[in-house]
Length: 360
Image (tube, rainbow, N blue to C red):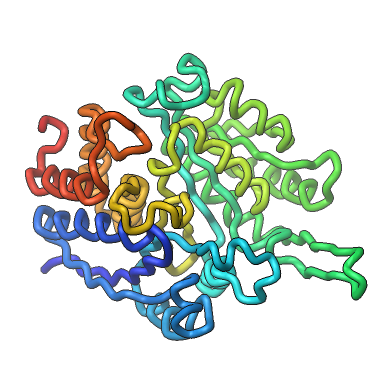
């Protein structure tokens, strides 16, 4: 009997629908090659949902996600909302609510330097060659979700940052377990010299580390971590951090690859998970068939790992490696000779169907 999985497809805005289409194309090739059955159901989110319903995350979309085994997400954002700081309803509210509602407390972002693309990174090739680490960012707590105030005269504002020990423990456990499958090192990034929430993080993680005696644990203040990310990123294996610091650090880490279009992510909870590229909606490229779908395709590979379909996931990653080695890339990776969004999706799907992507 075939493995069957229900996938909620939230394409969102801008280039989201285009890159999602390529990921689905690849997953349909996986169906044929690996004997899996995916049931794709589409839902609205972000600016597209506001335009249609007035709500960035309609109840129907929440219900769809709750009935699905995983969520495949594109991107959200639209200039008409992004350029209006006073807009009361914004696309980002849909994503934040989705994470909170579905309990997606752990954001996982792999960062890898590809040898064939070292030259496109603004960082020195000698500094980034061989870089391979993963950022574990807490996703449903901290300052983004704390109480927010603004005085009546508009001259004073505050954002409350709160964390509890259980919130820290659950993502720290994930980070330590992931380290066991890698190079056995966890780096906690915080600001424990000045922030009480960071001191809580450090206390909780230290106590938890006793249960993982095989894992090396070290600590970096976030400002130093940001510097080390540029100077010596090879030192990192698993980076563990809170919500806002993780948002900043993981975007900084994207510079290592030279392109946001190569970085996938997973947002994992106790009952479900969502998979999405880390890039934004890039509205300037929407509809032009030039966006890089590799991050979304690699996010689909992370989803297959979540389902336990590791052979299929590895086939996708190796197929992407093959295209990069052959310089079959979109415009932002090669301005002189480039391929379209659909070309990349077609090529990856073809390699999956051949079921021997390494030697193709």
